[in-house]
Image 1: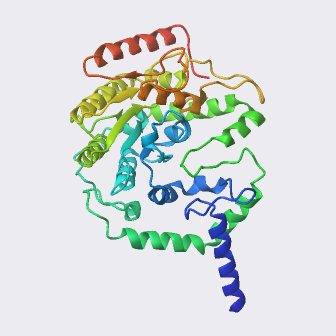
Image 2 (image 1 turned 60 degrees about the vertical axis):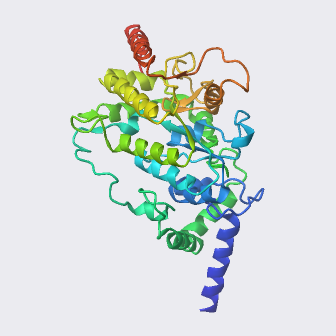
Image 3 (image 1 turned 90 degrees about the vertical axis):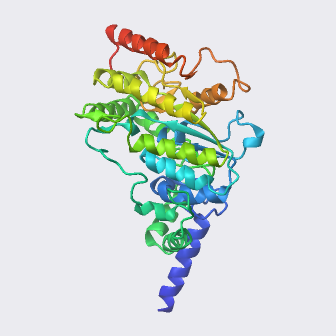
Length: 394
């Protein structure tokens, strides 16, 4: 019994010191816990707690695209809006993104939110959201959020947080991840998340060096094609110009307006392979309707919105065809994920170009009700022309 207790205490101390998921906020130690390869597996649990501990002034929200592309440490952030925390959560829907932003900003110092919106997150089969109530029923993960969907304080939060910390500390799975964390410290290409929530995507570099970037493109293109070729996909519920996703967006904007928190909305950039898949699968009309609806909602809450999905020199780089070790694209990791270099230009654009060098070509455009119609028409002409000239996916 004594040996078991000693083992338990020892494992707990190791887990606390190494903190493999960056959950407890233990200072990182060079050579021991600076890199957190296991943190990618627990982001949905750790980031909501981490952001409350970091007390940022600015939040970056969305899915994995802004998590990999928008750097909280970039020089473009205004001094009075630092520190910045990247709350991007890979693989979660719009409702959870909105609820996590609501949680992070509740009774906090947050004054600005940049929320990256993704077309695929709003797509669903036609029957999925008919007669959706609002707010929807409480979901299990919401016990770990400090605020309920209706804006009241969550009475289960403190207990849930304590239970999460305790079970993580004494877990043998955590111990295995702690040991793996220590062993991976000499691997410069290990997966990692920084304390500010940013994903530096070093693990992508390892794949590119060993197999070539075309492997990433080919795999993602297959995923995109499978997703966009499903029958009955639409952005709206039934015959109504709404859905759970649009209601989640409006709910977040309404909540932030009541707290006098500024929100910037932006549409994520996509490589031309991604845009081509949207067009070829008959979803371009929905893509345009989605943008029109976003502009309408943003206007309603006096929120600016930028479109970085436009066709430019940056997202029309030819898809990679080289073998391992060959030249990589300058602006994209694969069709769905843009590099930090693109994110840097996006920040320059949203903050009126007051930092960094001049852009060879605008990376995006601010959408207004007065210009969105002609803007969308030009983009449709550009994608049609590219495909007519034989531009295809890998």
